[in-house]
Image 1 (cartoon, rainbow, N blue to C red):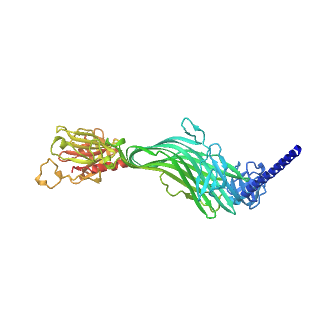
Image 2: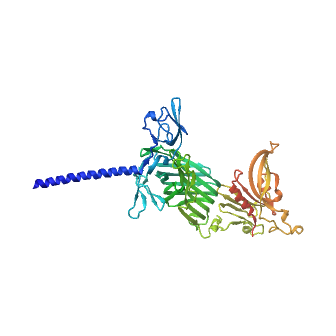
Image 3: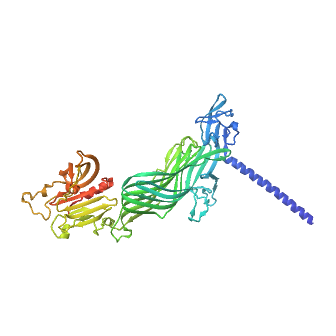
Length: 638
């Protein structure tokens, strides 16, 4: 009885194992058949790889021909696909249009071919991680989500409602305990200087290339997308007035060409990476910007031959604490940008050229203030933002995907800021900007000799704009040669000086100067009879001393002569500005240790002068604009 039961068990096991073998073998056969169904290569396709027999490899490849030592047996209409070889580093897809024998060589005449000439049917989904030594790739597949039926791409891209989103791969490197962060395949520290910009920082980034190719019945759906994951920080300092952009190439790398094989067909990908920094400013003053940011960006395209339309893939996620700024004075805007530039092509012919960057920007006006009630010591109003800046182009040097896929720009639409903030020092921030070191709020300075000495005499006022401060104030007591002297200065040391003198200062000098005087603006000063001066009945209704119209003048010093040894002027080139009567316009020679003050003062009734100077006799465009406005504002106090 026991033997019978044992025989029954053995028979059952044998039958079960046999059925299992049949089922597994059938499933494997089905899988192989399914793979064959997924990818079908056309019969007239010929393949060349680095493994091809040496005698069957070309000895030379030109734009329109492939040259062999021996006739490879190709026919007109055949499609040749080459991987990476010694004669074709980028590989190629060509169609044979003619065969010629020249001496010992066989010349195969060719024209460009496309992927639909190679595959009858194909579903290719490839993600390639770019590295400096050699790229790594993983294939992915498309399946149905049993819950809602949406089409998904595992471990790469998901397609929901015809929009692509990239899913982060779980292949982070080990955490670096020293910086408590992620190590990246590529990284760069940088510090670049180009007057007036200094830009510095560091960045690390990983890059993947997604390739999608679906071919069926002569139609193709294809796409390429660059996904990058980056982290970095950037610091910009702009030290003076500026209206320009500057770009630096920080790093450039042509990566090794990468080849993967689909159903025996080699597909070659070329990749080039660049890291760039950029600074821009349209401002008066100076500013510093800094920000840190981690982001993930996906940029690329998808093309469907059925519709002939290209769809952009453009997404960005980020994490940042925002933009920080520091400044002495600024009006206008400044930005600091870091961008990763990618060029990826199939067979070195068709692909994408995209640049994905992050720009930190500050726009408005701000200044250090003497108002101690303001937190941080700044006054003003600024709009701060961190912005994505994506530029790209679909490259079609030679068609590879499809004949009707044309070269065209991508990402033309402006993207919304990733982060933005509006900062104001207070509700009345404009008043904050006009707070001077004298403790007087407002943009006007009023001369004080009359007040301090309690006498009637001319009292003047002038603007003290933001970015300027009262460096010194001197008020005499009636016995000094100089009644009053007030010096305004900016952070670069440019000065505007008010002089009120008892008489011309005089002094001996051996140097004579020659200058051209020209009008640059009308002055707000309208001379009348000054306070403290009796009415001259003969000219009671005329401006005092017939000064006439007052102007802001540019004094261009063109020559100098040492009167003890020279007979002629030697050339020189310096400039200063002053408020003077319009009658001063023209060429003028002057001499004396106090030459500028004496020669470019005006009697009212004693000498007064309002003069702008710089240490080297030059001014930036922004400084020129500011000092003309200050000089123009000079007038008798209201």
